[in-house]
Image 1 (cartoon, helix red, strand yellow):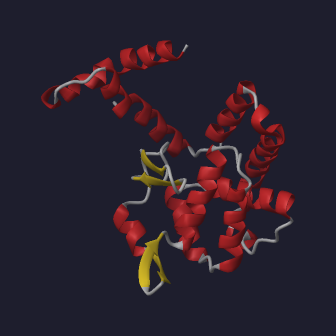
Image 2 (tube, rainbow, N blue to C red):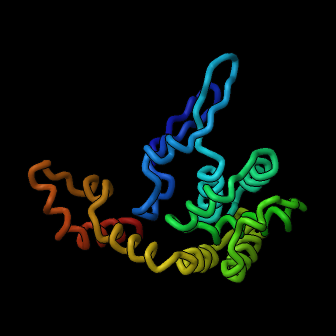
Length: 215
C-alpha cells in the first residue's frame, strides 16, 4: 500500500500511496482525485495536490486510524478547514460514496477540545454521526494522554471502536479484502505468476503462518 523513501542526510521521508484508505476496497479512483485536484505555484513551478474535500477526508481517516498520536495532524486539519474553502457539495458527495464523516467529526471535536479551535465546518456534517464520533474522540483523547505508554489493550479497544464506526458496506468490503491474497502472502511463499490463483485456497494457512512467526 505504501512505499517509503528516506533521505539519510536531510532526514526527509517521502511516502508513495496508491490508495487513500488501506482498509477499504472502495475508494476514489485516480481519475476522480485528479478531477478534484488543487494546484499551487512555488518558485514559478506548479504542483498538484489533493482537492480540499478529499484532503480533509484523508487527513481525518489517517489520524483516526492512528489514534491521533501526533497532535500536528490536528493542526493540519485546523489549518485546512480555516484557511481554505471546503465545498459542502464535494464533501457531502464524498461521504455519500465512501463514508468517513464520523472521522471528520472526531477530528473537529478533538480540534475544539485540544486546540480551542472553532472550525467552520459543523453545518456540513450530519447530526446522526455525532454520538459515535464523540465516543471515538473521547477514546482517542485517552490514548493521547497515555502517550508512549499506550497499552496493547487500549489499542485493541480503539481499533474495535474504529471498526464499529464503519458502515455495513465498508465492513463487508473489509472482510472481502482480508479474504483476498496480498503481497504479504507472496513474501511468505513466492509462487510463479501462472499459479497465482493458488494464493486463494492457501490464504488461511499463510495468514496463520505469519501469525505464528509474530508470536
